[in-house]
Image (cartoon, rainbow, N blue to C red; front, side):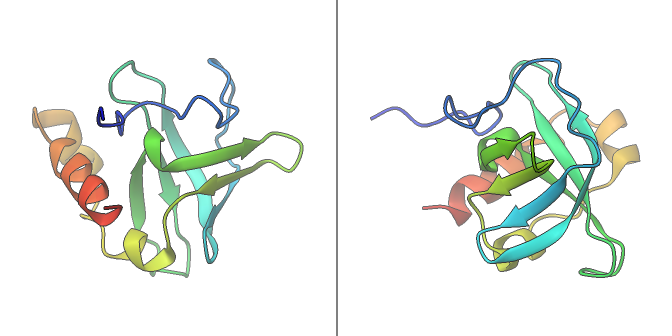
Length: 117
C-alpha cells in the first residue's frame, strides 16, 4: 500500500487547477470551522489556510490539500476529512516562519498523517 501524498488533492475531491477557492466556507466532519484565507496550488505542497474567526479566537490553521474531501463550487464550501478537534490541535500556522524556514511544512505533514491513522 502506498502512502497518500498529504500535499496533493484526492482525485475525487473535485479540485480544478486554477480555481479560486479563497473565501469558501470550510466544514470539518463535525461542523463549520471558518473560511479559506489563503490557497497554494504548488505541486508537492498544495494547502489552504483557514481563518477560524471566533471558533479558535482568530487563529489561522494550515490544512494540506490531502485533508480536503470535497470542494463544492456551487455552495462555495470545502469539506474536510478531519474533525474540529484534529484541526484545533494542529501545529500553529505562522506565515512569517513558513516563508523563511525550509521544512516548515513538514510538521503539518507529520501531524495530519498521524492524526488520521
